[in-house]
Image 1 (cartoon, each protein chain N blue to C red):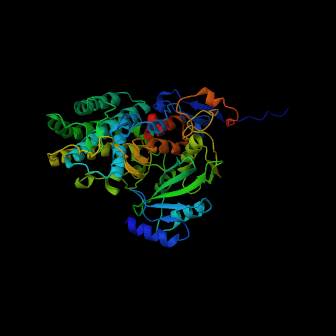
Image 2: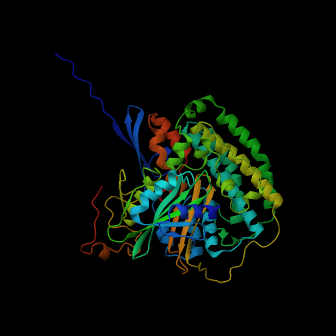
Image 3: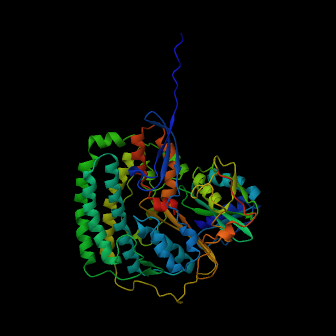
Length: 370
Length: 163
């Protein structure tokens, strides 16, 4: 009697759309051989709200609340990119003070967003405590932002040619106070998670990618800098008042999950530096250029503006036909492009490591689906 | 920097219809559909340009034609470009650039999903954001914003086969 041949086959596994480690409603469709991922596909669209299409039916200022809801963890950046694009069309200048206010808020939001990444990433690795620590500081940042914008997540604070309101009294002192303490918090975080051996084993060498591959896959943001490529739009394609400030661009070496984690921690320190310099240099003066007409009608044309959001290159492309509503609005969302690299990064890793890779790519689903 | 790039492009692609004025933010290169792949390859591989980063691909619906836009950037030279081509509104089809920039994969699928532009040579062209059986391509200007049943049930409305 011959022995029956052992049948081997791979299993198709839906990780999502309802899964705690996907950070939202997105489906990572895995093909697994035992515990190993041999193939993957990303299925999205569960949160598609057709924001770009809705924008064609709204006037220019009415679109600020819409773009807020794309990347809801760093809404200031979406507003920033949109404001810059339309300002290019309108060809208006922004007063110095408004530019400084914008930079302070945007960098505060970057810290808040990276803190959330830190907490969620630690949770992905199976450690709950760091999340609570990160939340402690994130609340402080959110309180500061609430003082200025009146709301925590969806500020609707930017305006064409400036910002909505001036800073409240005492805000700058409180911010300096927070930024001064930030390096100590970050040291604490590093001691808690980054220097933890279990965490290092879980992240070093996971999701490795070379700079060349990363560029071709369209990766941007901390994951790209983790590969060692020194590229940051704040320095390489300067916008607003960033050229005035002195800051470094942290990079990694291997391009794995650990490097992207390290880059984010270091970025928070640099954001703190930028905020401090901005507060020192903030001039008095107007906070908004008054536009000549009440109804904003940019001249015929098109413009693309991009900013460095916590997740990468966030750009807004606007086409105007001269009316009060944009003819076409397109948002280049970093999360949408970054998740594209997931099948390649996760290949030949364990399912538990795929979870870490999703965490390191840090997609916000509102932005993936738009 | 932008001026140098425009001169280099003008000297290399004299046969392509180059728009020297550009948009408000970027220089624009408009080519015929037949030349698109050739020009894209040259822009990526020629050391003078080395556009190694594709920001996104999108379409603007001009009612009489589709304008397909590729936003290209270079990490080496720090310059950017809008590469454009025009497609007819009936059965729009363009060559895929996935083999040049793998980023184009999702972006081309999105354009196909929302505008119905087909990309020849794309490795897996199917809907990305909408359900497979969604009728029509909702970002086209003539698609109603609200779900109008009478419109959707109209005879002869193109129904996509599920993929």
